Image (cartoon, rainbow, N blue to C red; front, side, top):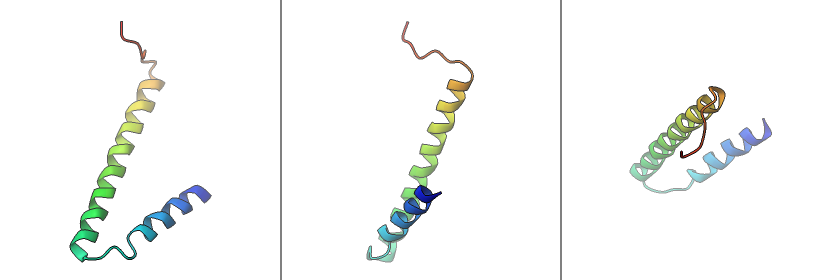
Length: 58
């Protein structure tokens, strides 16, 4: 829980004095898009590991 609060604080601090409102909204949208992509990747990896997918190239 402490790490989650730390990430939240870093997120809020990053956008506090960013500048122009358009740039601020763009970076917020981009960061949420990146968080969503990361969540999809983590879900896919956990799904593959839980179903016994073999990670080999032959």
